[in-house]
Image (cartoon, rainbow, N blue to C red; front, side, top):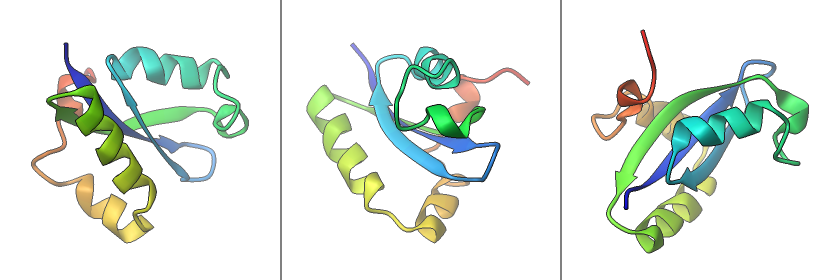
Length: 91
């Protein structure tokens, strides 16, 4: 089973939200349907970063690390080779 950490960006105000999921596209859909209390007020969201992890524990640790990251670090990750978001988006 694959686990991923992901970053979504609010198209409303540019806020980043970091999380983990087995299915980043399904999770994005949940965020955009208002199913997450924290992200509901800043819809719509766009998936901007996805990183594969070998285990759930690794994904949780990486998510915790990303939640502490400053905006400039997040922005540098968006162009990093670890970012496999292209595998999850069309176009």
